[in-house]
Image 1: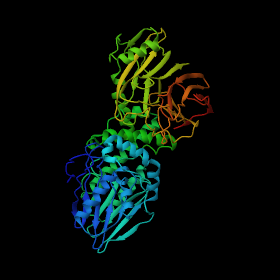
Image 2: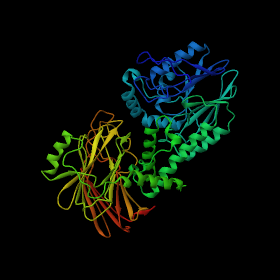
Image 3: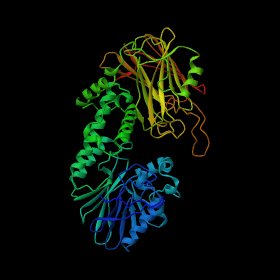
Image 4: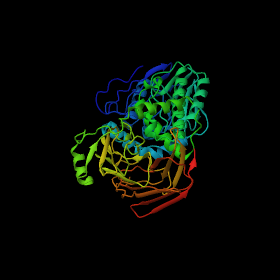
Length: 303
Length: 262
């Protein structure tokens, strides 16, 4: 996969769009933790260029990222940017929103995601600043959509109609995906993680697995995941679904046996998942989070 | 079913199979040679005899991501002496003493969730019937420090004072009682959005009794996690449990109930 160029100094993301399909560009994030060396650039973003206008997908992790992304897009095409679709509320996809608003662009987001951003935005921003350094996050503020949407929407960019579809309650309360029919390219946001362990704290595992089945049936030729390299092979979705099923079953069975999460965490993660980026951290987080969830609502049956 | 077997056998392999034989000789000196612990010994144990051994099984993750709620279990299933008193410490916390537990009759395990400010040895000290303290420790690496001083991601979720009980039949016999108490357990070290410190307020006294009599009373400090889940392994199945808790503001919570089975 094409990664962003090595970063010369804090604050400069060195963003270079990669033409994934004709008129479809991706800014590939690093498969890495939030680090001072990457400024939080760990998620993929992109844009689609039509005959008349340009649609951006995701706003990036900081104000600086969004400003540099707009510059990089303008260096690629002189067609006007009309809007950004923010796939969900997590910081690595949404913290650039205010830059788009200031430029008078439409910010499209699910209202459930907007509500999560209101709830968690400041805490997330402090968290990111602590990890990557204020040199990257200076000036970053929490934004809100100008166009909250709860129904699938088609956006006309000139010669191509781009579809924005809605997935609620799987990965987060409100995820959007963007489909370019002209090239059969799907920006799946964080509904799909490739080679990286999916994060579950804001969603529901079974709902998410159902959504992966839906995505699997769609007529896409290439899928740009929220994290990790380009997906051309549909087994990536199956593998993700398997991990989510494993996670839920392990915690549900363990919870029903009366284990403490400390005891659950002693069991090894199966080999199939040990290679996923971030498994050490996210698996533990997910186990503890599911235990807390099952304290509130009964766990699903142990399969 | 597949996973049930995996989880169970992993527990056996990782836990009880590696148990030191009952009565295995301990040592008189701290295996971590920690000066912080030396000070704690002076303050908390007042010259009592201390031995470092493997007489209890201390379960806590080696590496912790979310430092504001770290599950800990102290298992006495193979402990060769009567457990007269339990003290738990996280020695690099702002408040190293986490809890003192006074058993009123035998139980095979006790556990709850704690805060870790930074990487630290977690130590369980168990007093036997002769007044000797047996110390078991485990080093815990904290990846994201601030479990006592950063805004707490787990503080919401449960209503203040709401107590819920569940009971589980254990595969190794007996039952496990879990008691969850809704409480933010403010440490006094967290600053709110306006820049003001949130005053300390945490449950400092907790006692549990059932139809067979008193089970345990506990004294807790600010290193216990928000909305803590306390668990006890017992030989009997409870029909009726009373939980009494009191926090540092003097607010008392009492619940009488029958734990729901799962």
